[in-house]
Image (cartoon, rainbow, N blue to C red):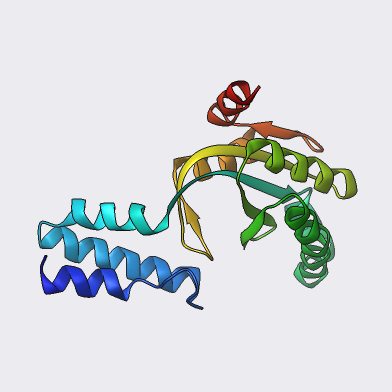
Length: 182
């Protein structure tokens, strides 16, 4: 393995590193580019999957009416609403065995071991606040302060496009996992 590959891989932050998601993404992009240029992209992908790959349920829960309320009441008001939303969601996520990974505007992303626990957390959050949610299930890269994978994207898109207020939608993979668990 070349020194460039080792340097690029080693420069990526560990799960415990306190770097911003943007800084982490830039480092990952650099590492992938160096690995590609050195003909070692497959080795770096294997490295990332070995050290950061997990199979998990991802819950994406989003506040209702954020855009409308921001226009009506202002961003400072909505920043307080996001804070309150987090204060409600965090202990519920933890109580169901999950871990809050990140927040993107008014959406919270959390990882769980099972679809059942992710859905239960989503239901409980939506019982106490207005919003919508979706759950995906599958292989992801868990970087501690960020999570990446197709099911992350599918859960986010499902939540944005299909979830009704007060409803926890499931991606196709999450529904299939539930069917197997029965």
